[in-house]
Image (cartoon, rainbow, N blue to C red; front, side, top):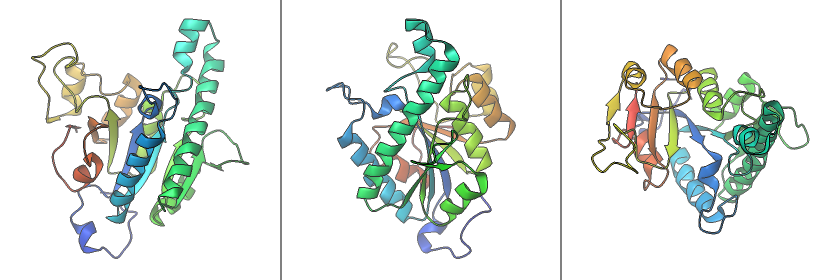
Length: 251
């Protein structure tokens, strides 16, 4: 458990399994697949409503957002021949666009929000400083972390793993398109079986692909739990922080 908590705990806080979480949200999760719009305003509103309720329980929330709905550095290199460093920089700037959209939506749901960026953009966001981010969390503000780590060749998976450890989070919540980790791709195989829990060691041995190798190695080394669940699970984040079993827990 995190040691950076309010000294006074409410009855709700005493029921919490996780009191400080890092939610890893891919850029693709923000896309409206029906209309093709990069940012699904309705879906973002539903996320804001759920996180507002989770925050009201006393949970401290940091959110690491990707930019794949706008631009993905690796695919730019593959498809267009874009220099990888340039492409990754473009991708990190895309996460800023997403972060500002999320901030605007969350503020309309009466949540105090701060956007912290790994690449200095003083006109639109605060620089990421560990102690500043911790202070925002302790004050009950939702912290949106953008621009990855500020370095090319680093995925937002790795950024989530790094920030979760820096911020002494209790777990990484990874929202995906499926409701957990399976023995094989459930989209292709009807006999795929979902794991309820799996250790870091088993995930490596069985090559379950929870995160990219570098990100997962960081989580494994520091024993950071990872909860993988479907973005579409009703009240999934709230249910998880209260200890209900959803998705797959790694660690």
